[in-house]
Structure formats: structure tokens, C-alpha cells
Image (tube, rainbow, N blue to C red; front, side, top):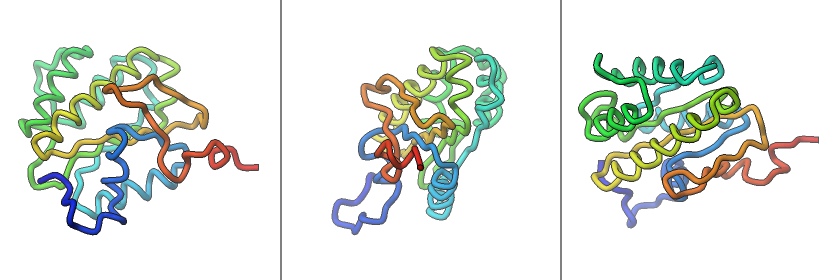
Length: 178
């Protein structure tokens, strides 16, 4: 998939809006996350949904990511190995297909994992941002959508870029209804 076409009307391109500032975007309202995932599916993105709400240890994350992205049996189930295997996903060796517009990894209830394993939770997002930036150089679109039940969750920058709220929930007031 080539980069976005600067001559095309991209005003309604959700993927471009999501990837413009960061390859990792936060969501609080599940309905907005579901709408984004549906839009991306409708535009031929491969959407992989992972329930991080059940992860109480880093090993849980490794198990589910490896299964969802069809990692090889020799996957080392540590953060360095995650980075290595995501590099292979980036180059279409497994876990993603060239037929798709791009790969979207959706984490639901990520705040649970972030509380249980804060260092690993941040590192996973950092690795994804790095791999997505590298993949973009070759026209492979990769992004992560991260749902949190905590409207105040914050992460240090990933991939040398901030983790930002989606455009509909960017203002604190939109995540704190009266």
C-alpha cells in the first residue's frame, strides 16, 4: 500500500487522522473505538482485537499477541522477542497480509494491563510505534488503537511521539460527562 496520496481528498480518511500525530491512539469511549475499527475494516484494514483486560502478567500479553499475529513457535516471549517478531510482521513474514490496506492492533481495557505491568505496557506501545514508523517507510500501514476505562490515563511518549487521545475525546471534558 503506498503512502497517502497528497492529491486525493483525505478529509474523511480516518486512518490518516489517526496516523498523522502518532501510530498509537487512545480511546476511552468504547463506542468510538468500535466505530473506528469498523471504519478501518470497511476500508480493508486487517483489524486484530486483543483483550488486555484479562492480562495480569506480561506472559498473558505475550501469549495473546503471539497467537493473534501467528508468531512462530520459537518466539521468546519477552519484549526483545516481541520487537523482533513485530519486525517480521512489518515485512509481511506473518501476522499481516499485503492484501490489506494496513494492520490495526486494537487493545481493549489496556488500563488493566498498564496497572498490572506498567513498564511492559509502555514498552509494548513503544515497540509498536517504532515498528509502525519503520513499516510506513515501505508503505505498510500499522497502527495501534488503545482503549482505556481510565479517562485520565497517560503514557510517556512512544516511538519518540506522544500517545494522544483520539480527536473526538481530545478535550478532558469529553471524557468526563456531567
